[in-house]
Length: 462
Image (cartoon, rainbow, N blue to C red; front, side, top):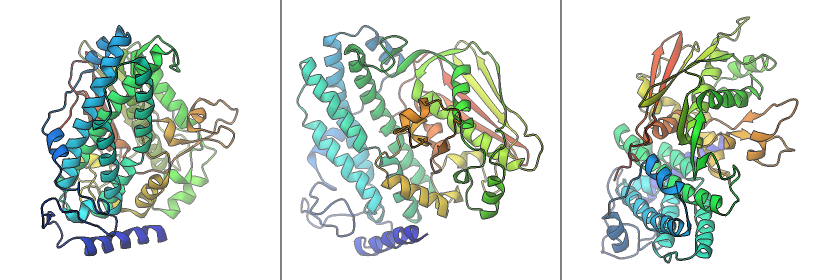
């Protein structure tokens, strides 16, 4: 609790010291004159903050979105010339997309953008923009190898961006309307996903050509896996979720009584998940994206089924139904976990980042979890592996996912409350959808739709 109080106090002090009035946009008194901030802010003596010709130049360029099909077709017949061309596309496309988001941050109320965590994101973006726009053209395979190492360094440095933004916007959310906060955060996350996709796809293509891709040269083109088995993917998520105690305290929020009740049921079995429908369905998609969405949905279904039926001799099954047609793949996950609580007015409010639509955003447990995630060197990347804390002998998160032990027991990382919103953004990124239908007091049906043709452009907002 002390950490949270200090964060709130820091945010309040910063608001009083660095802004003329809440909600007012900052205007430098003298064009081009450096402006110093003393409590976080966009950096001391930051001449670049609100007016910079390079930002205006790059932000005037529209991004060049891609489709999954384009990524597959281009990467399928890879050679050195095509790989170098891919490197230079990434080199010029990334600063364009970053510049648009820097301009987005500059349009925030000054009291928000100078919040410590939001300010850290601004500085990370500015640093990446400057490095990328000045990076020389790639002409050889040796230069491409150095470029991939450079890209991986940027990706690692930006891992804390999601908890930074979530925490910073939560603490300063009173200065933004719900629509303003949701629209801004959605644009930031969509752009972040888009940048990671094109950067990681190029790195994966380079690794495949160099013979060092962990999955070998077959079955995938860069990040995109050609024949993902939906039944097997759901089964993998279920297996990972069941390999942890059913009553872990981290899986319950804000109720000491419920925590104690859950802990008495640690030895109980998880709800059974039945998979039915078109079980032979295959899909070409980004593997990490598909796994993340299904993992988050199943995690919530299992959690609330346990909570709803703590005193029942048997817990009702969760049913995952797969349906496929020529254009789309559908997955419905149905549980009897009680449905959405009355505090949530609409099911879509679960996708909101605003405390006005989802009061859980400002609970002690959520802010505490975001503080922990912000302090972690691993940050949040939006994968399954990072959510599972490894046993001491495993050493790394990745090894934790693949490790097989007799106990097979793992502990999920603390809940930061961004799983469903991020799943929704990932699902819609290439033209899919994620919809919730709740029967209050009974259960929830989640409908995931993913286009199978791969012809939808990235959903990037300028």
